[in-house]
Image (cartoon, rainbow, N blue to C red; front, top):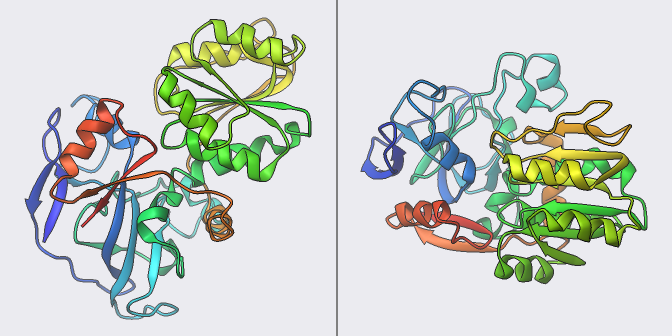
Length: 341
């Protein structure tokens, strides 16, 4: 079968022929219907040989995966061949306390996420280790909804953590309106009555943010701090969600948060917000989000079924997948790039 693999440190992904896997006891073979391309993949491919800690190469990419059940390994129950599902990505041990709570992304023994620490779904078929990592999606379009597994799940968890701050009349700032950020805007509108302000680096991205529900949008530069302060009577925002994670955006978050607010860093980069008595307003809390729980993914699927969120998708064939990553790397993807084998 064909698979898109990262094969050598510093290289770009390649389409190769690999052996079709067969499910062992407890495993499920999926025929992949869609797989999302993510900036996390770019982070993996940009990691130096000294710092690389993911699955030993070659690595089949793709941690956002939808598919239909093709084969069931011995002992698998609760699924039917042909059923349409999406894959919960943060695979844990299933036995420790976080895993038993559905928080497998925080597994005490480390997670084995496909496309990161094991082979992923940018292929014609994919093995899933356990039925608990599959969520049925019914009649939802798998191409349109494959990115619920990360691009919606991760911002959903980020926003849930800040809901007590987001009372009517409050202000939430979303930094970055890309793959995760444009879903965060919709989630904030669906879950709260907060005013949603978006920051990004280009006018077309700000226009996109307004299309999906932003109440205000500003260029992401130091002037944005004054713009947010002006909207909030000089007080600042109750919550700032940084979907970029570089130091300039972290500095923006620190500069526009109000007393008692919450900063949530989602973007995978090296930026940081120092929290102390003299670095941010008092009673500010900070959080770095790690994906989401299995139950939260089920909740996100229900939101999609109700039409509360819709992911903007750019579709590519598996043969054209390397171009999808080139576009992602160049910042040319509007929403989410999805590979359809």
